[in-house]
Structure formats: C-alpha cells, structure tokens
Amino acid sequence: MMAGVWLSMITIGFIPSNEGYEALFKASNLGAGITDKDGQEIYRSKNVEAIKQRKIRLHRKQVHGGYVYWQDDITELNEICRKLEEIRVELEEEASIIRLENRIKEEKAGLKQRTRCMTELQHRFGHSQRKSAVYVMK
Image (cartoon, rainbow, N blue to C red; front, side, top):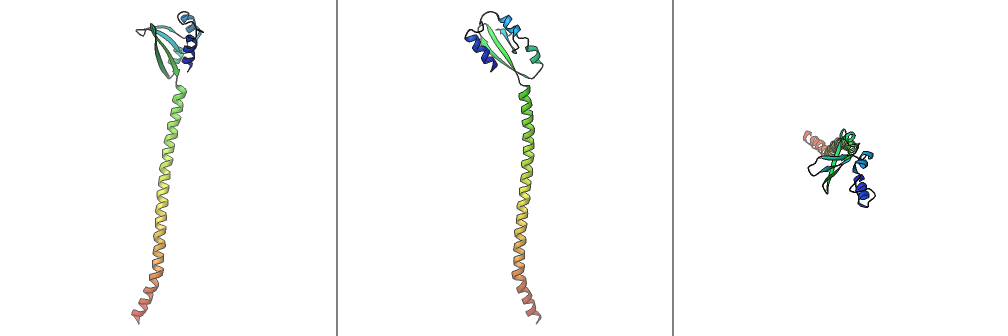
C-alpha cells in the first residue's frame, strides 16, 4: 500500500519522476530501490539493509529503463500465521475430544436403552416364568 502512495505521488508530479532519485532514496526510510534492466541496483533507501535482516516480501515493477522494487516487512504477518496455526491445532484437538465425548454419550445411551429393555423383558417374562415353574413343581 505504501508503494502505491509513492507511485501516486510520482504520477501526479509531487515527487519528480526523472530526477532527484538519489536524494529521495537517501532521505526515505521506505524499503525500496531502483535497478537497471539487468537488475543492478542504482538507488536504494537507507532502510533496505535493516529490512533485509527481517522477514520480507519483495515486490518489483518494471519502469522505463529498469525496475523499481520495494519490500514489505512480513515479520508480524508470519507471527500472526504462527499463532493461527497454534489455534488450528488446538481446535483440532478440541474437536477430536468432542467427537470422543459424543461417541461415549451414544454408547451410554445405547447401554441405557438395552438395560431398560432387559429390565422390561425380565419384568414381563420373569413373572410368567415363575408361574410356569410353580405349575411344573406341582
């Protein structure tokens, strides 16, 4: 986004587009530079070295006579991605636990239902079996 602001300022003439690069890049803390067509660095801001020591994403756009490049520091983005990965792992573990809990609840409900059926069967047929046993004994 910052590069877009700089390109816009160059486009509207607020920043000279074909002169004064050296002074502009010396004064700027934007991680950017200009290369020739072969990729040889012509100008770069003072912040480029500091940013090279961090995690960066390099962008490049062709301009007349070479390229302009700029860097985005993605250290914070990488940290956010790392935290999101930790959260994803925790959520997967939690989901696994919930699935196990649900399976146990289903098994308990099935056992409870079978127990209820067995009790009912014993109640209904157990009573008649005792009567049968009494008749057999007589």
